Image: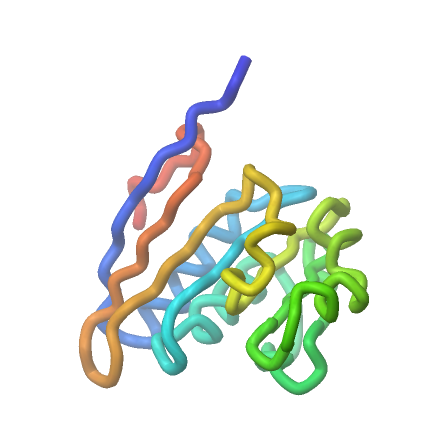
Length: 153
């Protein structure tokens, strides 16, 4: 039976709320899940992802891997955090070995996911964040399994 997927828009009013949303979503993530994050520079993608990674039980500081491309964490599942901001081409991304993570057993979280679009699995949870400066953040969640209880968000 095909699983129904839904869309949801959530507004956060602080970095702490954005992180808390990431942590709340992390409770639902399982083996093989991919979270594809998009949004302008400075909208809070890293803040949201910090909440996701901490919510998955990883210890230690969570930093954006902009200069190293990938960071790995161990929580209740293996976690790969990919930041495609500085990548120049899809071929470069493929050469870095992301496909094995996108189809692997852990959770893969991608910042600047639009650069990997042709590689993303159809089941990827899509997170689009908008709002700059002191503005509230609008976080558009797409492709969420209907079975996820998001009533607390």
